[in-house]
Amino acid sequence: MNDKIKISLGNESHEFPLVKGTENEVGIDIKDLRSRTGLITFDPGYKNTGSCLSDITYLDGEKGILRYRGYSIDDLANNVTFLEVAYLLIWGELPNEKELSNVSNEIQESSSIDKDLECILKSFPSKAHPMGILCSLTSALIAFNPSSVDVSSKEKMFRATIELMAKFPILVSWVHRKVNGLPINKSNSKLSYTENLAQMMFKSSGDNYQSNPIIINALDKLLILHADHEQNCSTSTVRIVGSSRAGMYASISAGISALWGPLHGGANQAVIEMLEKIKADGGNTKKYLEKAKDKEDAFRLMGFGHRVYKNFDPRAKIIKKTADEVLTKLGINDPVLDIAKGLEEEALNDPYFIERKLYPNVDFYSCIIYRALGIPTEMFTVMFALGRVPGWIAQWKEMRLNKEPIGRPRQIYKGYNSRSL
Image 1: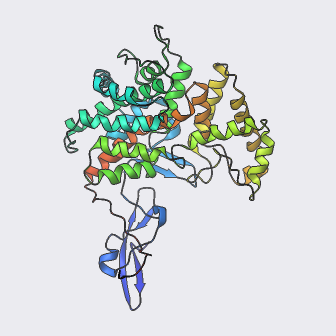
Image 2: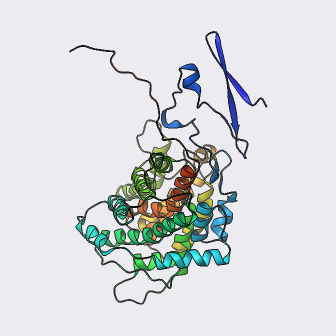
Image 3: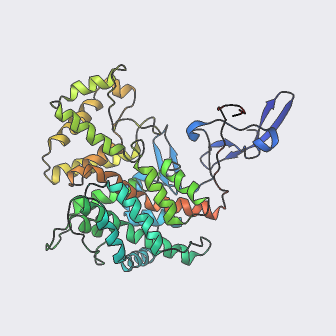
């Protein structure tokens, strides 16, 4: 294959180099396009634009492939913990026993938050949206950790990462308890990362919390599946904010805001809202499947298909088994989740959905699990953010180490020409 491509403009032609990835992805390097030709590309949503060279995550939507640092999502979800996956994403390799123990101990020792932050939590009204609270609390952490991270210093980068990985689950548990009108629980340094999260979220006052392996396994898998997903909206936001040399906490706070949107992290919340609507209308799943097939009908079946995965969502295959286990072994009795299972079964056997490969995606199954665990619908995206933290850290770190230039998209101006008053 020629390693250059020619672009002709009138009597002039210009050659631009091709960039090839390790999975044979090929892109045109146009960073000099404007300086050489006066042209820019027009690509709304940047769907055809590669913004960076990355070593972190590989995604092939046509083949249903998702890998972190070369490891398949299936291998990781079924064989290692979320903390090990976080280590892999941030530091490039899975940790050995000593490295994992060191990180775990460091996180446990850093699992406390300044009392003044609790005052900020109490100041939010009872009906404040959980994502708004989480974003604000994450931004507030900057005041208690004001120094910018020197990414070239392994020690400083390690310290900053530990602090955020340790404190973020606490913030998530605070938000969960706030939403439910409950007092906050303290971190327990004797528990594993995910067990500690569960006890902070679910422990009743005065109870001796007993860890449930079904719940811990479900949470661990969900966090792993959401840990990174290439250059999506929130990750791109983290990188572009960080490209201004904004700090890690500030960049990740911006990523949380991007994740909040219903077209991104809010998709699993939209699934439950749809199921509630079907329930309120009598629970007739066949009626709504027919509505979904009708192009003239405004109804959209949420949680089926994916804008990136054109075949199947590899994460959905993994989490479906976990969702079934949670519903069965925890003995959940919920008519909304019954509707979800009915929709799943009918859609998987309907030729219309089979031919179009509109299979249930990770949002569909994750919302089932979160609801079964008693997590409020508006908290779903908060849980998504917790899983995505190591991916955001890894992407921010990579962007800074690569010395990427400040993000500055161009535009095609369509307004008035020069006018006089």
